[in-house]
Structure formats: structure tokens, C-alpha cells
Length: 162
Image (cartoon, rainbow, N blue to C red):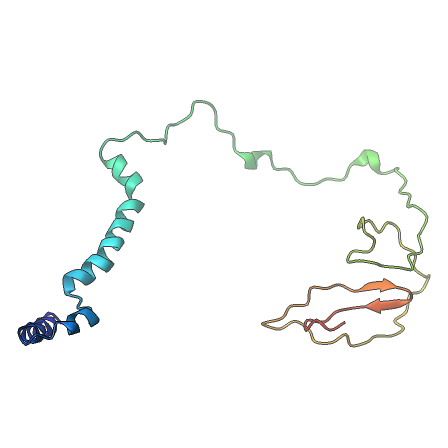
């Protein structure tokens, strides 16, 4: 590579003697030293910058690894298994009155996202199903959740179609 650069330089020197200096202004000539300065010097500086903390420790710098006084207690020693609380066996669980929710205006139900005790029939059955469009793929994701209002269910597929 160096030999090729030297040959090019010799050709340019011949051109200079002939008076064609305009060629030098149009062509940038990079030597091996220029490439080393442009590539290797920033890499060396990054390496040195990364090792600043290490170099400080080698030359007698203060270490932050001081051992604190006191007793070490393992947090794993405090681990316990879950056991049922015998005192809560007789506690009655009461649910609020079931609520009929005819509208579902947003993702998660109502705006406060607290869908308490929803009403459902005694024997729920699958009545119908429908295709809502294109599902998720590599480029498009389906994020919209269905909402209910005025007796209709609104959904949006991954392509943005409602």
C-alpha cells in the first residue's frame, strides 16, 4: 500500500513540474500516516479514556472498596414459606352486588379501570364470534382493545381498520 502511495506522489510531482497544479486541489491524497491519525488515534484515546479509573488505581490512587464495619446478615435467612393464617378461617367473604355494565367505553372498561363485580348469567354460553381483521405481524402490532357502546363492539386491527 505504501509503494502505491509513493508512486502516486511521484506522478503528482511530475505534474507539478509541468504546471498542472489544479489537479492537486481536486484530489485529496491520504498517506498511511493520515489514515493512522484519523482512525487509530481516536481508538487509542477511547481506550485510554475507558481505563482512566484503572490507571488511577495503578498509580496509588484511593480505592472506594473500603469494608464497612458491622455484622453481615443474609437476606435469604429471613425467607419463609407461605402458611395459611388459622385465625382467618372463619372470616366470611362478601362480594358487592353484581353490576350490569352495558357500556365498555375504553380499554380496561370504565375510565377509572375499576370493573368491580360484573354481572354474568347463571350459565354463560358462546353466542357468536367474528373476524376483526389483520392480526399483528413483524411491522404492525395490534394494540387497540375492543370497546363497547350503544350495543356495538368496536375493534381496530393491526392495519388501523375499525
